[in-house]
Structure formats: structure tokens, C-alpha cells
Image 1 (cartoon, helix red, strand yellow):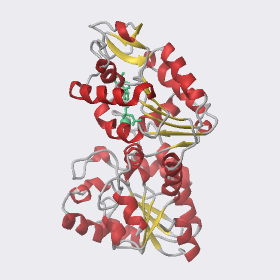
Image 2: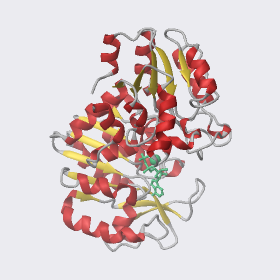
Image 3: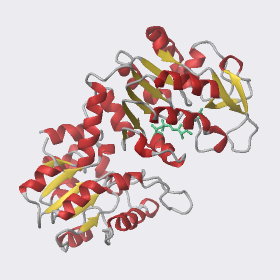
Image 4: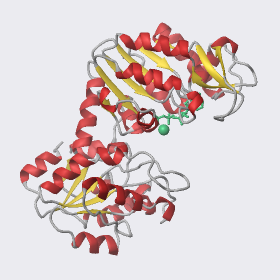
Length: 397
Ligand code: ADP
Ligand code: MG
């Protein structure tokens, strides 16, 4: 796999580079302001290196899930503005993805200048299952540039036109973020230093069952919190009240618990409330005493202590998924406590997942205390599952 640094060594001055970046940041629902610019900042090293080498950089990216047509709600305009601030230079935004305006603006770029294309998901072809449809869009992307650099780690598990098909059409290179993410994931999968502890949380067990199956034989401990712990607790025979429960996954969770023995560690206490609200009265109970009319919205303090002990001696840690509804103040303590324990790990600590990374920043934790904070939730989970990622396979050829 050739890297952007190989491209710079070859000489990139005056050449037009199509750079696929992951700029899919969370926006405030009403103000449309960016609430966490972590992914934009993570894309800067590759972008700066290309600019300094004199490349003419055409950035493509997606934002949210528009329905395959232009939708002002999902315009990349706020991202272009923030990117411009961070780079200290104006970043114009094309009004289309790969149409007349994109062609005109890309043609007018000077050395070291940056153009952002409009949200690639404004084109239905971007995510189409039909190779020919994606191919037609990829042809238009390819016509904009001389070479292609993929730095959108968060999208490498997608067989999309701007990630996969365009790389078949242009000389292609991996960006620095992609290279860095891969380096860390390789350390997690090939011979990790032990003890190796994985912490999983977040909302849906069904999203993460495949990664649990793949990781169980490799880890020394798997700590489960977040909304997904209740399906496991139900599998152990506990009543979980109104907590998140995926009834159709209880049998699978029971089988996993049987197979894993003491390698799966579940919460011992939970913070409950009668409803999903920051003002609701909370009670903390043992997992065998969750009231029928309450829902578990965070792990309790004894669980934080237990998970902290398990993490204490670990030399490799991967954490994905918040321990509770950290967006609401009364249910932050579990995520804060576990995030703190992960940050104190002596060996390699990796945080994966959009919400987990956002939680680290929102809770004011020191990002530099972690070995690596991944920008790609789905992509890193699929890598750990051992699946083939189309966006990486195409770069390797
Ligand atoms: P990531 O993006 O890090 O992979 P997920 O998307 O899987 O994480 O899950 C994040 C979401 O899980 C958060 O919005 C959080 O509020 C929710 N969550 C965590 N614990 C619970 C719980 N006990 N009940 C309901 N939702 C929860
Ligand atoms: Mg998420």
C-alpha cells in the first residue's frame, strides 16, 4: 500500500489530488453548529502535508445521511468554514459533488490551495449497490484529479463510489490517518501484549455481537456495560425493568456467557431512573434488584471499581461504546470512571467509536492520555472482526 508520503516523495507540486476525508462531524440539531470537530482536526496532517508539497487538493467527504439528493440540512458549508479556520486559509465549497461547479472550481485551484466538494451523499450513486451507477460517479470524480488519496478511515468499510470505485480509476495512496489507524489495529490483532482487556458499551448488542464473537477467543477479559449489558443480564436471569433489551438476542448472549466463563465481566450495579431524562430521580441498585418500572441508564460505582480493577493490570485495552447515557449529566459517571481507568493503562489504550471519542472530549478528559483515539467506529469494529474492508483492499492493489 503506497502512502501519501510516497506520493510527496514522487513529487506532487502542481498536481491535482482528490483527497477523500472523513469530515462526518456531529451538528447541533437546531443551530447546525459543529459540536465536536475531532474528525476535522484528525484530517489536518495529510491535508497540510499535501498543501506544503504544492498539491492542488480537492477534498471529498460525506455528512450525515441525506437521501441521495441535495439537502441544505446536510450541506458541508459549516465544515468548509471550520476547515478554513483550522488551516488558516479560505476553503471554498463547490455547490455540487462532481458536476459543473466542482469542475470549474477544481480547474481554478492554485498550488497549495484546497477545495471542498459538496456532500458526496447528495448523489444517490455514491452508495448504490449497482457497480455501473457507482462507476459513472467515480468517472466524474476521477476526471477532477490526477491522483487519489484516501484518508477517510471511518469510511473504508464502505463500498462507495468516493471510497472504492474511484481508487480503481486513479493512482491511489493511503493518507496518514488511515496509515496510523491501521498500525494501531494491527497491534490489537497480531499478538497483543497481555493481559488484553476489551471494554464494550453503547446501545445495541446486535451491532456488536459479531465483534464479541471474534474477540472472545483473543481477549483475557471482556467488560460489558452500556445499554447492551441488559441483554446479557437478562440472559443470566435478572429482571431488567424498562432497560434497553434485545429480546431476540438473549439466547445468543446466554451461549456467549457459557462459552466465555469468567472472561465476560458484567456490571454488578446500575443507576436507574423511571424515564430517559436529565431531571428524573435516580436510584442505584444491584443488578439483581432493578425495579420493574425503572430503566438502567448507567453502570454504578461498584461496577466502575470492578472494571477499574480489571483494567489496572492490562497491557492492551480496546474500548468501544459509552457505559451509560453520557449525554445526560446524571448518567455520566460510569463512562467518566471507565474512560479514566482506560487512560491510566500502562500499555496500549485504544478508544474506538464516534460516541466514545466524543464522550472523552465532552467529559473533558485528556485526549493525549490515550494511545490512540480512532475516528472510525464501524470501520475499526469490522477490522477487528477480521472482515475485508473494500476501501483498504482497493488501496493495497
Ligand atoms: P460508539 O459510537 O462509541 O460506537 P454506540 O453508538 O454503540 O457507541 O452507542 C452510543 C450510545 O449508547 C450513546 O448515545 C448512549 O447514550 C447510549 N447508551 C449507553 N448506555 C445506555 C443505556 N444504558 N441505555 C440506553 N442507551 C445507552
Ligand atoms: Mg455511535
